[in-house]
Length: 354
Image 1 (cartoon, rainbow, N blue to C red):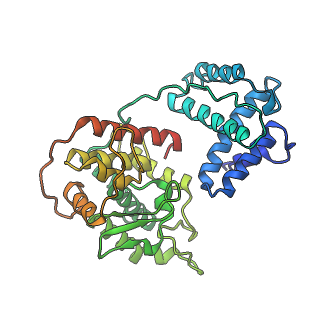
Image 2 (tube, rainbow, N blue to C red):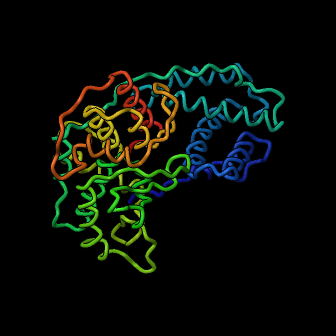
Image 3 (tube, rainbow, N blue to C red):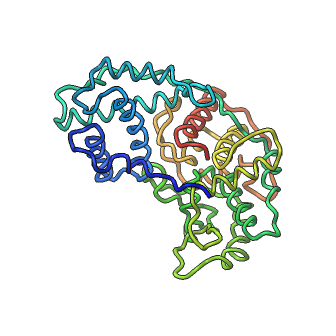
């Protein structure tokens, strides 16, 4: 039996208010009051826990004891640290850990807990621009989808989930949070509520994915729903909302079973959707809207895209948008495509394996 996961917030309970962890608790409370997402608060709590532990091991118990040389020492330690498998921390991970510490000390200074910010002149490591580690071809996607045994009701549900992931490029947490009423079948759209950054958006969903959702809702969901019905679209075998870890594990198992020589889970469909639509001629701005990215460093200032035009582009460029595929792939600017896909890879690393 797996041990229940410990909330990172528990690392900051019961400490003196002026101590390192006590101050971090105040900062995390400030984030919650300012309506940061639960995921953001939890993620920063975990990152600050790493720093607090590092400081405690060196006899540093209060933020007032941290100097610029100590911050630089922590930066060097992150660079030379090796995980249990002997691998170094990724540049993105180092960047995230340092940036969260920097923001924490900026908050302390602005709120007069410190006279000066020891991290004010910290130079963060330069992020690498890399191509995504795993993107599926159309044939590989179909092989993964075919692994679901349609004689099993829960695997019919899983097939519907994977079709939604593939068609929309939604994040794992966004799919888990879908309600029955978020899918507009006649319009061919899905409303993503409170996505990353607590932002809503409306995006297209293809005909094939809608067919599988209909099959699941009609044939499977009634077997598991329990009163009172919370309205979540996808349910587990106890009639509850899907857990993110459970969802990731289910999808990962299908990717592994397909034996395509690639690893991944929910996020691999997000990568794949963006890659295939770009290859078929979709403009990068439309992909931004689909993915829920407010901006990308490599593209122009964010432009709001009309849902009607976005639906047209999705139908024209997504391989599974229509039951009968039409149209030929077109060329697109390779630099913008590579940057967008690299951004997805960084996002996957920052949010954890999905």
